[in-house]
Length: 260
Ligand code: ARG
View (cartoon, helix red, strand yellow):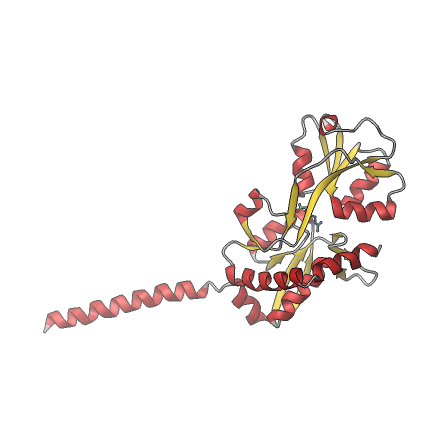
């Protein structure tokens, strides 16, 4: 009865192959499963971006993003762990699995969308140009050509500045440092996010100001996860939507903008 033995062998082989394939797929756990299993959600950020994230006196990262992330972790029933790093290290950290999510007043843009997935947007921002008060030489985008421009490295402001003809871009670890360079005369202008600039100007802005006539396109902040991690993204989106709908995000913005 060779032929039925062969038949059984073939079926067994097929079952084994299917099992192997399933096993392989199964060993690649989703980010959500991993987080739940470990009981920890790792949030990657750069805490130089008030009111979204900054360090309080006790060295803890606080701000709008910190509160959003705390809510996400709470909903998932896990602990939140923060990894505070250079802003331009965030994409690689997400890619390598060092962090589960980027929450950093992080603008969704085409380049980033190639590497990661973004959540529902929770804030509309734009880039602004800041100069020394009374400097009338920079009134339009054209005037930025061949100038020295300070930015935070890896930000959308960095991208804008890099596109300006003949500009010498000075890339700093933070927008605050870029503004200090501006005060000291080491750069002619700073390009950075409107909301954080508002905050910095409130606190150290006696001699620097926003150029009102230079306007960039709107941009939107979202949280970013590794490409394809749709289950984790769903959890995040549910929390964000609730916080947007019930006005919590707006309240947090007021709360953290007033501090400083
Ligand atoms: N929105 C800008 C960007 O995504 C700047 C964000 C800076 N965030 C920070 N936490 N330092 O490029």
